[in-house]
Amino acid sequence: MIGAVDIGGTKIAVGMVDDRGTVLCKTETPTKGERGYADGLARITAMLHEVTRQAGAEISGIGIGSTGWVYPFTGEFGDVDFLPAWKGCNPVKDLERTFGVGAALENDGDAAALGEAGWGAGRGKQRLIYVTVGTGIGGGIILDGELYRGVDRSHPEVGHHVIDASGSECTCGFRGCWEALATGPAMAAWYKSNAGASGSGEELGAKEIFQLAQNGDPCARRAVERETYYLGLGLANLIGLFVPDMIVLGGSVMKSVRLEDLRGVIAQGCRFVPWEKTALALASLGEDANLIGAARAWHYRFASGTES
Ligand SMILES: [Zn+2]
Image (tube, rainbow, N blue to C red):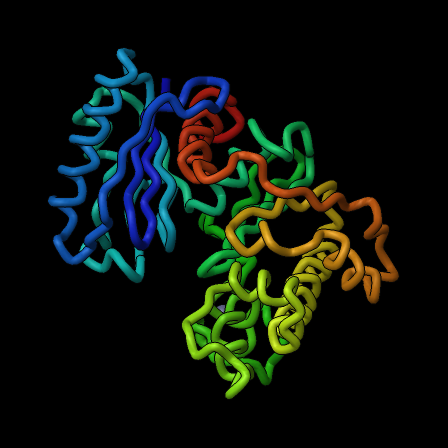
């Protein structure tokens, strides 16, 4: 039974996850990074005690997934936009001391990739890329059954490859990254500035724009075409670079896009690789994907014996 901790920009979720990837119980709290590290750690500790009580089981390990720059093997937090006061702090060591069990930390994209590869849509796939599209674009890469890590075991950022160098500014320093063009908010911003007088004037999210397009709204249809094109281009790049067995697609935006339309974009290029053999599949772990992924990160680190 693993205590799973998912640290995101708006909330911190904590749950108990069994060894088949089922969430037995969970609770959450607003992130409130401005309250500092000690406050966040105290809330995580209290939530872990609470879910342990609820599940009526002993905790045998702790898995943590977090957005942003974290150091999986030292347990330290790096530069995380919404948790500046956590920089240099080490929840892995602190939670291990409190609970007397091993804890594993991963970037949440890597954690969710491990979750989908171990318990989800990508089960058994040796070459798997997980991509999640919501307010950002994140993901993780599994090669030969193992999580790919870069230099210093760093986490590669699949959302920051450039799609259109003349595109809008990105937080990373470049312009026109996949993340700058194809997230839900990027789609909403494009629709807002192009709907003009014909638009309803309301702030619409990606989901509503997909709905409007279905109802025949011409600007919304263009927004969907644009979104599909950029998503497809990014996937085509990943296929060209890795030709994986499967790309697992998670996040809110992916629930609205038609996979056959993405395939249509991919088919326009990718001539020199067997792109038809790369399956596209929707993520199967649902809204708890990050929590389940955090638990899987513990299994991957301590139970599989492939990394130390
Ligand atoms: Zn970028």
